[in-house]
Length: 249
Image 1 (tube, rainbow, N blue to C red):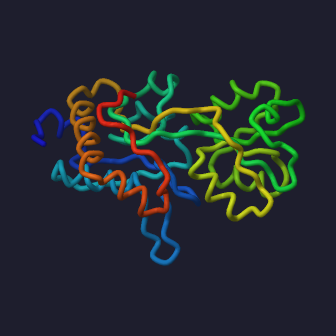
Image 2 (cartoon, one colour):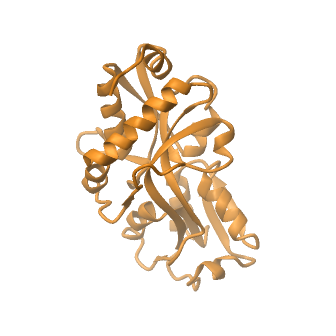
């Protein structure tokens, strides 16, 4: 991939490329994890960020956030240059999306002992659904389960804790992450279907056209080379779906 001066300037205005990431207890196409033994970051976004920096020939700085909502909130502040994040209409107001690399679905994990067995049953009064503030998943859950009470928290860790301690009846999150949470909560149930079907894509702040074109081409290349598939598999996401070539956000 040829790198124009404009692309390098827009992607690394400080001389290094700053990648906005979310660190979570369980991995997903957006969530990085921290290795318990080494403290090193691992995950799809880490692999993609490093590969992008290598393509550009610049150093990579990972900028950590508690949630994708926190990344969105500072999209125009100059804190990050590139991120990998679920696509939704609200986010399109503050950032530009390039090529998707992952097909995602959000659903509910119900608390141990809960009688909720379907998405429809989650949409009831007195059902408490917890989600991470500012995320596409929480916005979609509020729309899909209008009768339930929604609890917005700062981070995935906070959301998991409310479900674990019985202060919420269901946790709204991406299916991949919920599968990891389920293994640590005996008796919890991962519901079939999804209230949000979307994609995870590369994104840049507004008004960076050269950067947007470059990262879109980069993502198409990583899908074709198998990097996205290998990165998903490396953190156990072997059933995750890589977005098709040429898919639009």
